[in-house]
Length: 571
Image (cartoon, rainbow, N blue to C red; front, side, top):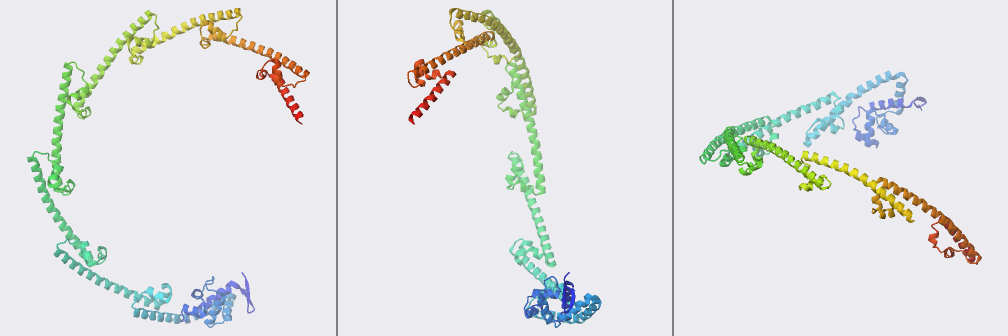
């Protein structure tokens, strides 16, 4: 907390000024000058003056100089204000408070008299201007809140008088308005009745020039609208009753006419005859009862006709089944449907007919199963005979051969379980025979291959797989199909490879010697040593020489020396 030395006295800054502002506010309670006039006189804003009036110490009261001007206006020196503050802060708070209370008691009546006078002046001015005098209007002119004004008893009494007067005035005005609306509504009803138009709440309110919602806000008008609604309801009920009586007579007459014309009496037929939709006819209870009774009668007769039709159709189906059985013709559901000229899906809708058709279908399935079994036995016997015939001819006995002999596809024969088992057995036996024959064939072929090798060795020819195949009469790939023969051919290939490698090494050694001799020859004759010169002496092409690694290394060295000699000669 900061300290301030003022008139030789050191005090706490914020506490002193808070007390000064409170005291300063109390000296202006009796002044009749408004805040706006005071602000204009002091050349400051009304907000700052209002802050001082409220005793605001948080900054809304303006600058410190504004408080000095305010103190000068209320005719009190700053020294006196400061003395009050120092006294309050130096344990003289009670005495200063008493003095302030006394001062305020003296000032408060004067402020209330001034407020009452201002209120009376405002009331006179508003009345002269024809403006409604309300509490809000008075407080707006005073620039004070209603709560502030009501703190003063006399001012509060004056405001309450205006509230009571306004309420009484409103009641009288509403009563007058209610009577006017009732009178206009009665005239509207007379006008509508004379024009032959329906009297409803909406039509009456339109002629009155207002809405139904507004009229319902007034008691007498609301009672009159209720009477109108009751009248409309009674008229509606009477009209509905008369309409219902008329439609009952029309419906009964339409039903009689349809019966005389021997037409089906249905709701739709009656509706078309009367000229009113079925949904509108159903709106009337008595008419709905009559129509429902017709529907029940129609449904009952329809059920009886449907039952009779199903029985007749079932008898026709039974007759067709008997006739076909007598003629030994196949009895199927499709044949029955075709003979009757009725789709099978439609026949199955009728329970008696469906029962007969299901019985026919079950018998048909049993007969087909028996025929299938007999056909399978017949084909099995034919297949066995075909297998014996093939075996007697020395032909291979296979499922395909049997099928070809019978003129049937193997897939067709395998549809029959017994025939399928027989063909599977035939195929297994054929494969076993093929394995035994293959082994015999392999042994015979191996012996031929060995004889071919001996022949090639004795004749001094090269032993190769192609040479062996040519002698035996089978390609090398065909010989490799047999494992034993394949192993022999593999051994021959390995020996041939080892011989070729040995020949390659010997040839390489020979070429190395020839190349070295050619180099010496070229040097002794004074010629340049080049790959081309070596190739001519050896009588072999350069690519052929380069196939041998050692020879290639010598040739590469010769090429490097030749390039160096050329480069040196150019320099």
